Length: 253
Length: 253
Image (cartoon, rainbow over all chains, first blue to last red; front, side, top):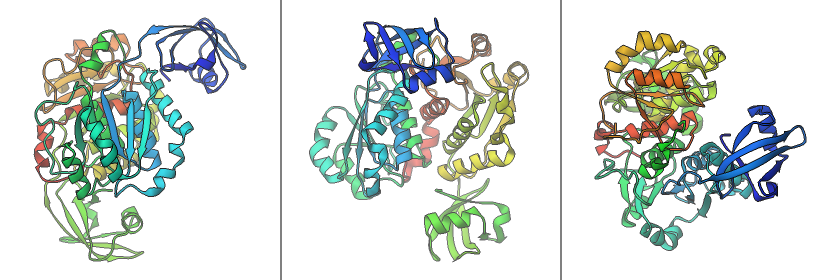
């Protein structure tokens, strides 16, 4: 946990928060912090700053909170991905969130098993946990969202036209692989719609639908990567000057 | 498993292999293949090709093997990384191998716990398993290697001069963060020495040693990423035309 996330409910007064849940446990057992020390904190949806420990015992962690710095800028990428099996979903959401993705759209496809849509990992509390872990890792406060579109055809008919109009659509899935970047790197481009397929890839008619929908097909080469690895590698390529402008001061990677 | 890896010991005659271990189990239970079907196979250290199933039952998988295609080109990156805790090590080795890294060098640092050096994950059979999983994922046959240098100072004195002379050294760890790419992307550069620090980063004197050793300090922005996420994101940025030249034919991502 690189950032202690605080909700409005945690505040008992202006600039004064009291925690009693897993965060108390974490600060006591993992951080092993002590009264008087300062923790990096953030208000969900708000600023980041410092929390000075006023009290820390079995019963509560009390903090004097001052948050004035903006969270890191989001990664300007909308991630549209074929719903993977639950453990992979959690990795994609957590790592994507840590890297700054704010909008995830899980879609159906021929190679997406229907049972995945009833997974516990898609329940609100499970999603919130994946997002919180990612935000805590990335020192961010802005909660992402996940939209669900189990029907491939309906997604393309009803949702895609608006989405593609908002950015540059890239399909990172099947071939014939176009060398990427084909012209200029998408890095720093304001608004990429990155589409990632299921294990085994989209089937041919699906790829044709993406192409007809205006997607440029990109590739990371001849190696087949796991979905979670491919997503992180692709997002890594999309970190641009926007994200880095904030990095002029010192931050560990 | 995207590729069934075969060792010399598996061959009972020229172009004829018999398997009885976990690969038999995998092909029966996961692939659910049948006699007459063809599997993608590769010879460790050699070519990739096809294996036609001649026999498949509880006792053995017998294949008629023809391998004539080269494995995918390696990623021209030497990964020098502070030894992480064992689960992270396994992820770094497996994902790095899938992405084409052939040389890993684990080093000590102030924030590397000494107990990590005695971890089971560093035993030869555990390393081989991590590498095999990565090769099977990336459809590669060329086994990587891991070198160990527990002493930071000794590494810099005895090993670094030769290493840095062989490529472009980049330190992806602490700041002051230089915007990356500072001049041109390292993508496609023949021989990058990528140095990745421990959770929490290298301490200041260590960063100074890397700088004095000629490293350019690069950053992925203000977000703190887990070691395994940072490694994949960084490697993703280094996939260049060399890796992609082979991708002119169709391959799923």
